[in-house]
Each structure stands twice: as C-alpha cells, then as structure tokens.
View 1 (tube, rainbow, N blue to C red):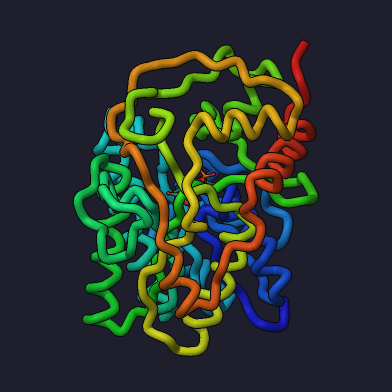
View 2 (cartoon, rainbow, N blue to C red):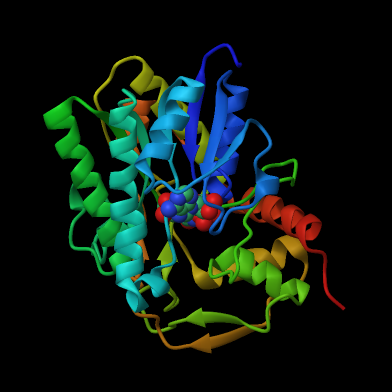
Length: 331
Ligand SMILES: NC(=O)c1ccc[n+]([C@@H]2O[C@H](COP(=O)([O-])OP(=O)(O)OC[C@H]3O[C@@H](n4cnc5c(N)ncnc54)[C@H](O)[C@@H]3O)[C@@H](O)[C@H]2O)c1
C-alpha cells in the first residue's frame, strides 16, 4: 500500500476521475477506483485497484472503505449531460442525488467522513454576471445543475449535523488530457465541445453543431470558462490535503476567470491542428445559459489554487494528442 493510505475514487474510471487518480497516486496515496463503468473505461484505471460497484450500493461502499482502510473519498460518479437531464430528469435525480445518498450512507457506516465532491458551474444557471462568485448559486436552469446543487445542500446539512467534512468543487468546462495521452475524454455519444469538434476532424462524428448564434455575447455564441483537467487534479489534491488536516470544508469555483465563445474555441482548434472544423449552425439547446465564467478568487485565497495549465493552446494540443492516439482518423 502507498505510504499515505487509500483514497476511494468514486467514478475513477471516467475522464476527470482517472486524471485525479493519477494525481492521487503521484501524491503518495493509493487510489481505489469504485465505478459501475456506466460511462467509464477499465483501461483508465491504472494507478490502483478497480472495484466495480454502484455508489447507490451503500453496503458495498462501506465494505470497500473498510477493506482498503480508506481515509477520504473523491466523488466523481454522476450522469452529467445537460440535454439528457432535461429529457429524463428522473434518471438524473436517481443517479446523482439518490446515488450520492447511498455513497454518504456507506461512508458513515464505515466511519469515513471526508469527501471531495464534483460540483459544477451549472449550479449558477443564467447568473447574469461575470465572473460568477460562489454566492450566486441557486437559480439553476436544468435538472443536472439542480441535482448537483441539491447534493451541495445535503453536504452542508451533513457538515452541520454530523461533522461530516466535505469540499464541493464547482468545475466550469473541463477539457484537455494528460500529457501521456493514455487517458482523456471518451464518451458515447460525445456531447462536449472540444472532443466533439476534434472527432469531427477525424471523421468520427457526422457533423459538428454550434447550438445558438443569437446569444447576447460578442459573437452570438455561448461563452464558457475552460479549465484543463490537470488543473482540476491539482485542485483536488489541495482539497484533499485540507480535509486530511481536519478542515470542515466549503465550496469553491474551479475556473480561470476568462471566457471563450464557441466560435473562439473552433478558431483555436483550426490554429492548433491546421484544420478547419466542419461546422453546422443549429438552434439553441434547452438548458444552456449564455455565459458561464468563474470568479476563481475564493479557491486561490483558501486552497492556494490557481490554474496553470489552462491556456487554450495547451488544452487543444493535449486533447488532440489524446484523440489521435485513442481513435485514429477514419478514411
Ligand atoms: N466534464 C466536465 O466538464 C464537468 C464539469 C463540471 C462537473 N463535472 C462533474 O465531474 C464528474 C466527472 O465528470 P466526467 O466528465 O469525468 O464524466 P465521466 O462520465 O467520464 O465520469 C463519470 C464516472 O462515474 C461513473 N459512474 C456514473 N454513475 C455511477 C454510479 N451510480 N456508481 C458508480 N459509478 C458511476 C461512470 O462510469 C464514469 O466512470 C461528474 O460528477 C460531473 O458531473 C464535469
């Protein structure tokens, strides 16, 4: 066993969970992946054991925590496609909210009371201001964001009632890939902007659509804050350290404070790959706010975290290296 003990990584076979597992191992812990493989990949579990299980299964969670003497949990396991959550909210509340309650029940039964939780910029809905401070959360505009905000509130109640320590990290748009190109973004179907655009270049998706060019933004397309997954991993280790030092926790944005429009991302992909993404224009999607840009000051002040890997060229080059290795060009 790694000298600093075991960390349970719920959802560790997914995109962000696998990158954080690598960082957890690099920091001297044993990452124990707990994943039902709904959207995750066995091949992404490289730095510790894989336990195939559902977070809703509180008994299996408790047994796993006891078996590995887990010190804290990182919780990435969720359904996270905004459009899907609008079409099927029940599936989202069941997997995200009820699933998290199962995880928490299992943790408490096993005597583990430290959690780093994957929240999201979707808790802000149409915040109508930029950059967005943590205090602006609440008026969510889709079931996915609501499910995550509900979990944050559950965690605050657990902190008050049981002394259960948790840090909720509200990521804005995660992107990029590990420099080894062994892990990266891989979903079926792929709905995220950068991987879908790169897959369009490779001939793996029929078209690449921009949803909405009539937003109240400088070029009419939606604006987001893009944060490299390596930066997210650094922030997770900082949060874990705080919890292990006995801090009660809190809620933090993880973003850069800079927004890019969809068109700006498509142009950057053209610059970095030398190829033009074949774009089609479509109507806005239900549940998509116009602008989401983080105020990163609170995480910088209290976690000592500042994004270092999130410049657009690094994001796109690392994602492109992963895609070229993971699923080479068709035709
Ligand atoms: N990707 C982003 O831009 C982004 C932004 C904000 C927040 N998040 C959050 O970060 C987390 C990770 O996102 P991701 O992009 O890596 O997604 P992902 O789909 O790649 O990873 C999720 C992992 O959780 C597993 N999982 C899902 N439900 C489970 C369950 N009930 N029991 C056990 N395992 C389960 C999946 O198999 C998968 O391995 C999610 O909670 C997501 O809501 C992601």
